[in-house]
Amino acid sequence: MTPQAISKRIVTDRFDIVDNLLRDIRALPLTDKSDFFSDSRNIWAAESCLRRSLEALFDLGRHILAKGFGLGVTEYKEIALRLHSQGILNDEESKLMQILAGYRNRLVHFYHEVSAEELYEICANRLGDLELIRNGLRAWLREHPDKLDSTL
Image 1 (spheres, rainbow, N blue to C red):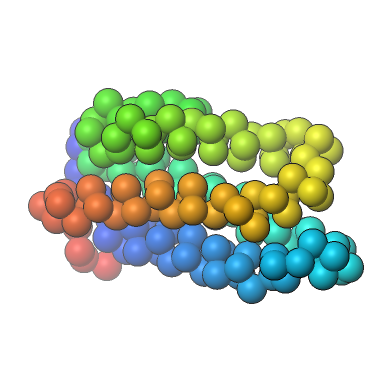
Image 2 (spheres, rainbow, N blue to C red):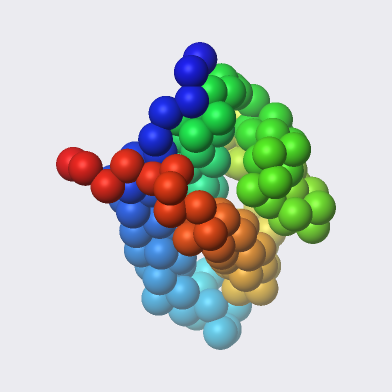
């Protein structure tokens, strides 16, 4: 693959997806477990929003690697490693993103092993992990405006 410009439209779209889904998770009754578990729809909303926000982050990472560096990456953990090797994410962010890749794979392939309690704990206490990765990608993109294609 030949490096090209990273699409600002795709970048903006994926950041918006992540931000909107995190906002939707935070709108759930996460301050009280009994309120959260009183309506099973909260569990399904939390799972869907969490999985989709993870996928949007990884899609964005894949787009940056493919367009900006000509690197084709398919595995989620490899996306995190390559973002680090290209200087896009630091050590901490890359390690965290690898953990998030494993969690995304659990949500998709081992969904039957992810408990409602686990989903609640992550949504109530760990959304900052996704924001850390989002912020790392956003910071790199701001530092490299020459890599972005602003055309629609």
